Length: 381
Image 1 (cartoon, rainbow, N blue to C red):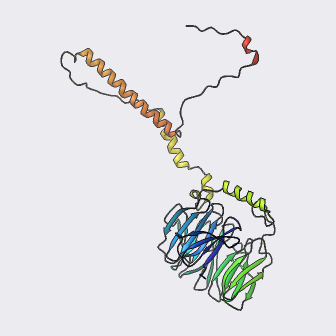
Image 2: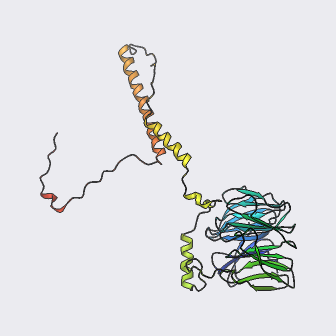
Image 3: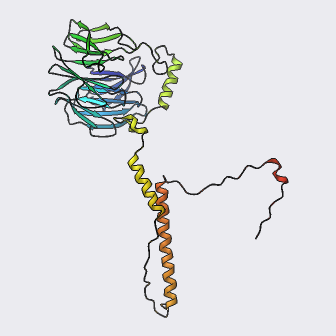
């Protein structure tokens, strides 16, 4: 008997998370309560990052929270200072969370930073709906002034296309084949060729008996699900689903044993949350300026000279400050200073080489079975 604002599945269909009135709960496929997440307070939207095993929630008081489902630990909870976060979605390509705000901007967040990694002004008024296609290339935003804009997520700048719709936009949803579903009160419109052409083609239009509150395409099926105030409708949209599925990625005919093996494999291949960035390809790149600085510092250390040491020993009484004694003590102190400096240079070199020791291990050649009959070499003193 509590209001439920959002529901999302976790790594498989056996577990789901529900954002209820006060806290977020996790249930199994039989409806049994497994966990109660009290730090996700008054959540409005839920998103599950599949490859990172992270559950993200946006709350009514402007907080974003990330929870590691595999370990049960909270990764980060930060305040956005943007008001109520009722518009949120994830970018499936890089795992970045996108939020729409009342000032017409969308912000992108990662669990590695307490500040937004990107802020973009999309509309002059509040953003009502937000959706990103499965490839992570295009962003669709809807505003209260009845404008729909398509943006390129890889090169943020001017919008690719902009449309003026007859009614206000409530929900947006991308399909696997770049079909875009738009709901406006009780009207549902489907556009195709989103991002490919400057103007999207209106593919289908449907009038419902009541206002549409939710919109989502069914993966690998030509079905668009619409939730209404008083029920649910399924719309057939030919060509909206991916016809060929990868059994290693998502297998609808998987058995119980295969589901367990897939879950263990996914846990072993879990990507750490520290690797979530706007450009995931930058992880495999080389930081050329930093590498050049390290090489230059290493070259300088190879040709460094021992500095000249000018030491004046203190005067000693009882005949211990003669010229011979002073020269001997001065030489010992200079030698000690040189050794300390060379030791410091050696530690610097090892640090630049990645804390690798300079000791070389010489492997002895493999002995043959008949080597015992060879004459032994005598040691020469």
